[in-house]
Amino acid sequence: MTKLSRRAFLGTAAAAGGALATPALAVDTFEYRNDISNQVRRNASGFRALSWEPYFDNLRNGAILVDLDSRALHYWSEDQSTYKLYPTSVPISEELTRRGRTRVTQKVEGPSWAPTPSMKIRNPEWPDFVPPGPDNPLGSHALYLSWTYYRIHGTHDTRKIGRRSSNGCVGLYNEHIAELYELTGAGTQVLLI
Image (cartoon, rainbow, N blue to C red; front, top):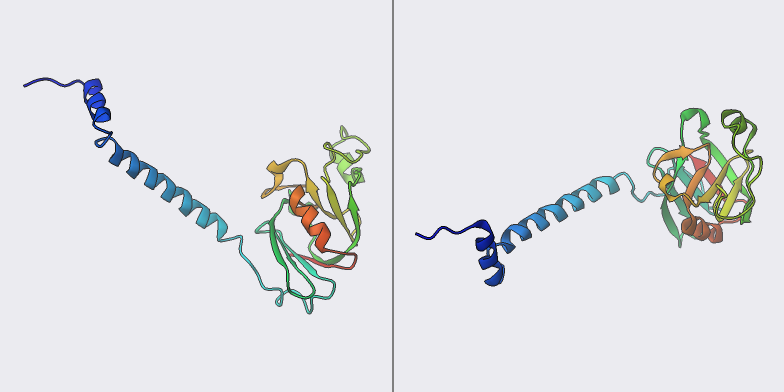
């Protein structure tokens, strides 16, 4: 009987069209894809579409619901023709979190930023002012709320989305805040839960 080395066996299998090696690879690939789809399905289950009725009496001027636990922002247009669901960043701690009803008071494209007095105490090394641009923590657009210092804004640091990473504001990817900016106006209702 001829002794066949591993290298010779694999070379013979490859010459034969890989018929011997392919089934194992196909199983591994299938199991790998199956694992990924199960993970995505599990992760997406907390990030689901909601109805506006449990949260708002009406949709006058449109409505934004920010669910701080699932880190999702929901938007409904006044005529109910548009519904959007975006992943967000949320405040890093309960101490920095504000919940309740507010509204959009101002929209700014290319916002400037200055740290709040409490941010400056926690982070004295931060600059006093950052003009619009790639270093600005408010990203490309900002929706100012009736609460002082609170915003729904973009971010250039996309690693923050989906995390507890803000100092009180709600952050979105820049492309998402640009879209939401176009959909909303002064007076849009906002509820943070």
